[in-house]
Image (cartoon, rainbow, N blue to C red):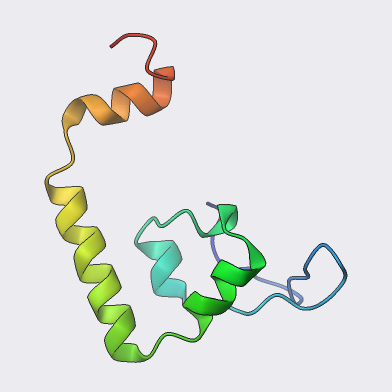
Length: 80
C-alpha cells in the first residue's frame, strides 16, 4: 500500500490506464495496490455514499481486530 500515484497516470499490465481510486481508500489502509484492475474499477465507481459505508465497515472491523492478528501477519503466523 503505497498511496495514490503522485505523478502520471497508472497503467494496467496491458498498457491501458488504471482507474484512479479515491485517496480515502489509501488513507484507510485498504490494500488497494494488491487489487486486480477489475476490482479497482469497481472501487473507482463507488458513489460517495457507498464509499462512506465501505470506510465505516473497515473502521468497525479494525476496531475489533484481535491483537494477535497483527503478529500473525508480521511473522507469517509462525508464532501462533
